[in-house]
Image (cartoon, rainbow, N blue to C red):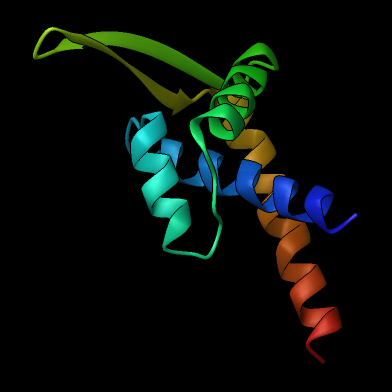
Length: 98
């Protein structure tokens, strides 16, 4: 059950960062690690692929020093979902932290 909560938080976190600038898997692993989430590539990439499948993220591949890096950014649909999530988060925080 707690894993499901954290998975939701991680998905929102990804949409948030990808709405500000294109992000890639390793960067997200490090960024989320600073917030206490310990993720492996085997965890982050399926989440990214699922968000892309759901049309919340889109990706672009770029050649960086001979290696292909896939960057993700939030789609307009993802921005709407993020906005709704922020509203719900604010409501939840107000209620549970009272």
